Image (cartoon, rainbow, N blue to C red; front, side, top):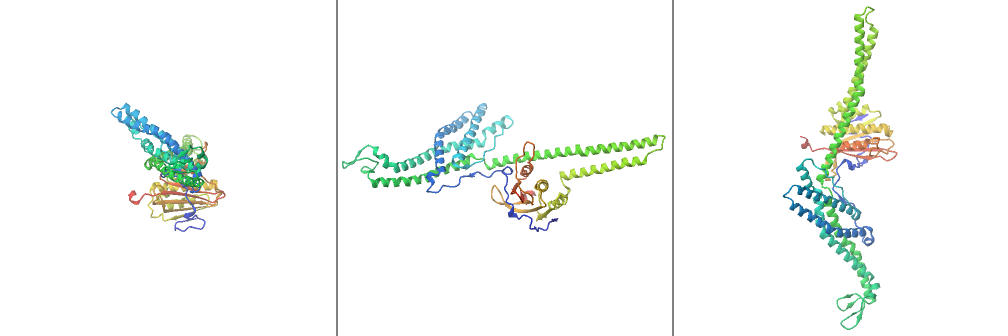
Length: 492
């Protein structure tokens, strides 16, 4: 049963029932963000592991800062010194690319000690050609940004370590002064009296119980303020790490476009290989059989016309021609199936009609609910990949889910862009089945099995599409395909 009036039966999933979970492989990653669980509670902050990990980071940053600063200054000065040469620029480019290693080390430190989630930059791809290779080395944005991080964090590492360590040392010293002050040397005040303990000014000594208790209270206060002041410097390190050590949005887009292009080329190559295999193993074999049957009929006619016997055996000739005719019809049917697999003719009438045709030919009941597709003006690439995505999902429900029926809801809806958060128009397809559930996007095993949804995710990446899967064990399964649509002006 199909419907295009926009009505959705109770068995069809509502838009809110299928929460899409886009696979990271299908879209470029969003800008890096802090992944720590917020600041620890004030009363627990001095004892929290995150506080002490951050303090350990300041130690490491201080130890590495002089070497990082020296490397950055040597790189820039060496590059300026050999700028008049060509071979020297290649050496300078190699030194510059070494900053990628520094950036990787600092990135791992930020992830481990500061709880920051930072995406890895795209690997460097050497360019072909002498000048293009040189330009790619000297213009490596990831290396330059890592070099800038190494330079600007030098004063920050010193200031952060000194402030944090002074706060911690003074706080611990104040809280324990009552214990170790007995080993301090005696000091004489202006009035001639002798005192043993910390002195503030010339005549105020912490050597009475009341003053010891006051100093302990001051130490406790500083101990609780220590994580707050340390967090200021750690926050700056987080911002610099995310801003300078993460890939830029442009580089993510380029890497994503290259991957999507590779997936599209591989998918097209695989489709051509499948068509070639079907033509060779099926249609070609049938055509050879037809040719042989026509040749047999020709031999019968030749023997009957030239022989001295009873002439042509019409019954045998009719049987041969009937077989040839039947084989020809089978071959035409196979060719139609192949042509339909390349691009179904129903797509010329729109996606809604194509989905209805797909539902009519499915092996189990499929109900199509098309909402607002008539005037959507979908690009041909989006229409084709949407049709084949639904076809594959229906086939999966038939073969693996043991479902008794499938609902397909298709419509154009506003969705939030993953990169900017702005609302954009998108074609949303929700395929709902009442099968056994347990569907998930899994990497294919060495035999190639288990790659259905993963392969569909890769194909959708060619049009910036995403795949969301909600499939608890026991069912039902809701798979959501979301394909952003270009603005109408962009398609004209």
